[in-house]
Length: 497
Image 1 (spheres, helix red, strand yellow):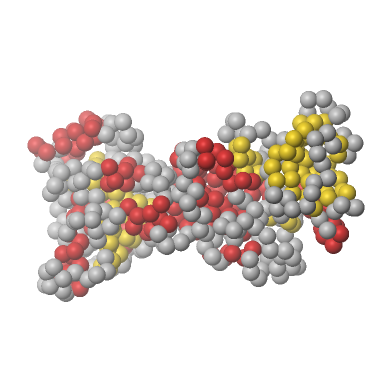
Image 2 (cartoon, helix red, strand yellow):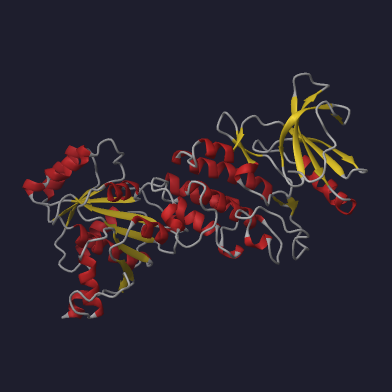
């Protein structure tokens, strides 16, 4: 509640024009009222009353002039400003926005906002932040939080409170006053240094994390990845993680940069055959996910996942291979070979490395979410042949879903059966891999599935070793997305003999 008594009540008239109808809300330093326009019958406005002592009245007046100069569809128009020096009260008259706050909307959904609205919501907020940050001088909002965002009946998002917004002043080393809402304000709003556009981007990250965890978290702390909803767009996770970096120089540097990242991620599709994509497409701040799913036990999913991981490591570096199964044994045995330990004596660490690929054994979805917030260029998920809900969801959400099925003539139909059983899900991104399949089987399956991304995998006894034939197939599979930079060969099996 506002500590000082208000100068306004029902029927009060501000500026000889605006009659107070009712209170809309109040905070520590202000109240907001609905008012009717005496000169424009039927027109309603929001009037914000704030208290400013004589020592900061000039600053408040300057800020009001700045706000009145703004014009953006996601900002309420501020059309008038009045002072009451005797009481220290100042009044801003602005558009009345019909709707509810984002906080109230979330409460109505019990902490849940539909996943398909998350990215559009982020882009709407970024649109207005980009507008503010590119003013001369830049305008820093400084208090992005659910109560300051209004959701209209048309599902449009409007920023409604500029109580602590300020113009960025290049000659200052730090803010005069440290303000912001705990949990959403950037670290620099509480210590030395001046807030800038990157401070608002931190708050956006906090807001997105708040939405993605059902209102439980707004700071990236230990264990937070376990509360991120599993069905959310995967590309959001590395974006949120980068927005929430403690040091401003480690975050995205502009709203436009985040907009480009989200649009690139949301629109991304593997390049179609015959279409080249220049190397600029690799300038990606987040992580791409390749999910390898076997149609049946023994179809070669793990072997293929290893081959793909080392292929990617030779091309792009920074690759993680994740065994997404808490009871799988394959990676444990591999770790014993790598570390030279006895059977059954695997290290307590679930991570080990083979020629630049980080292997993660017996992991869970929470582990995957945590890795997505890191620095890996690619994460390859070895899903085995299991089709439980968790692994199936990871397969369906991957950037590159790979189905591995037997290349034997009498088993090729297993892949077609899997595709039919999941036909309610979009399959345009899927890639089908048939180890040792004859060309006729590939041709027939392409025709049956009406899908070009069907590949025969050649004989490849050592998936850790480069193989020219296998590289040709994977070059085609990742055409236009992986730059052609070759590394020296690594003979894992030879090294163990």
